[in-house]
Length: 304
Image 1 (cartoon, helix red, strand yellow):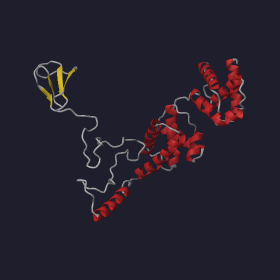
Image 2 (cartoon, helix red, strand yellow):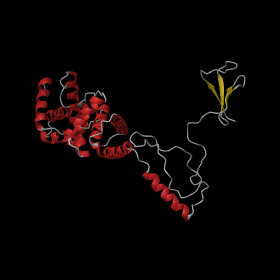
Image 3 (cartoon, rainbow, N blue to C red):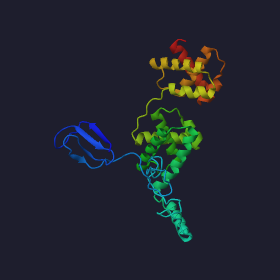
Image 4 (spheres, one colour):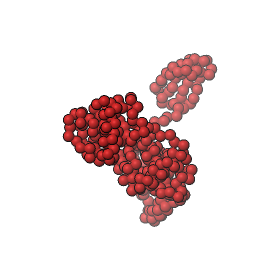
């Protein structure tokens, strides 16, 4: 018998002592002073210590995949398994195999029968594709699914394209999490016009009462520098320039991608690296005119 003494705040109901003992074998919890049994068993939240399956003796866990908002059924659906064996582990007969196959077919067809379920399946299959295309984290995907579900509950998807509303919800999630992804990135990957995504984005902000944080141009610097093939020295100098610009409050109301691109170009000039404005503009997704204007503004404001 393995006993474990717990000196916690809970007291014995009979003698009032705090020396509670737990038997790890039987699961009983009792008082170490008077022997009063407080509970006869303890609920175990970890994996099972014995297998309930006949054919998989090494698998001691009875839990399935974790629930997720990015699944149309949140991962809580049940399906007929593909193992052609009965509960005792014996193989099924030929006639029973045919019957089970038909049942599997009808079970898969009946999984999605509500309009909302069909909507979620189409939207979240597209979201799963965008996750790989845009290299997004699981937290951003879950936030996107949460926003899209709220939009569908309010009837905002009706009369609008599912990919457009989904891209707008994804852009909201990226803004809230500080992930540097632009509307142009969404438009290219989901094949929806930028204007349509912007319209859906403004609708979500208005109807769901969302408050978007201001995008910090510093988080855009690493991405632009990587795509333009700039050195680490240039990137660090650009971060210092943007930090000084934020402290002087001259970045408000300006495109963060344009500011980051201009800071990188200014850093290239100061470090003597030959990089054209066109290369940085293509990496940032802005025009060369924007870089020139922001470049002049940074030089004048910071006296560089």
